[in-house]
Length: 174
Image (cartoon, rainbow, N blue to C red; front, side):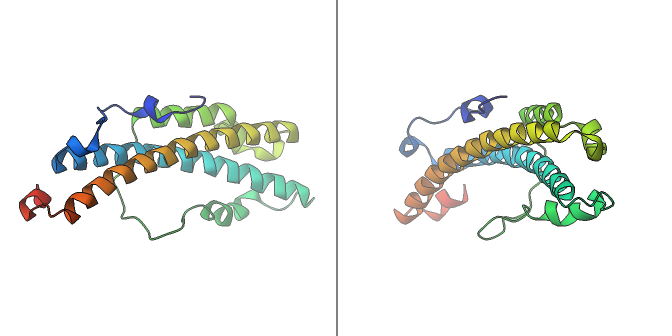
């Protein structure tokens, strides 16, 4: 999936005009966007983990200490991207959509299990090439994710506007 676009990932009808949607419809659209965001987040974490693993291996090589075990360095490297700015989001049941597995499969093509299981034997030019390709994939996924967040924000803004305009409690609970 080169140049991932949000339109490729959306499998629901996006409303053309949010103001014509009911609160129930707006909440459903927000939930649909959240499902897309969950899939993108899942795929991005996998790709980022591969990038971090390659970076740790390249760092190990640069230190010219071949006896240093890559496995001992990974926990701190992989933990570096587990928390973004802002408040933590509530945990979610993450059952990634099939297209997220396609993104992960692309990451597997770039740096698969056989290479990951023995990074020390992978020639540096191959590692650098994999790292460049994974970084490009991560940028595509992150870009799509930002677009989904923009769309989610528009829906959320419309929901908030309805609350501020005096939507009834019954409307809010539906």
